[in-house]
Length: 165
Image (cartoon, rainbow, N blue to C red; front, side, top):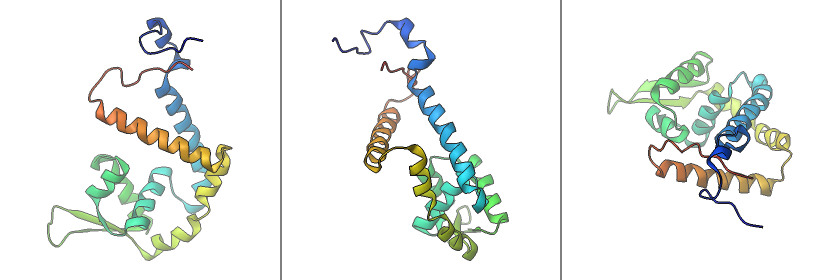
């Protein structure tokens, strides 16, 4: 059987929704968000807030800019998340004494305590996937490689290229 490559697949096939890798990732992301929404409701966290807390639990106090780098979020998206986490009592923000333009964030005692309640979240999410731990690790590795390739491709209108199964 001949293996199809980008040059051997007819252009018309690329316009089929079922062949869009970006749509498959989008659909999987939406499905994950639904599972996370149910899993995180007892913690009173949204999925993006959970990601912020993961970074802070792992690294402690960080400049907001660095949190954004870890999560690939701009300040316009990250600032409202941090404000809501601060209002909930999970995060404290403060201006850096060295540079007043720089704001840092750190978990409060309540935010640190929330970590204990969140310990079971990754296992519940992994179980919801129905995949083995080895398959999950391989999929994550593949997605990291895909992200790196896309980051290195520059502004390309075909970044949402389709893949033929």
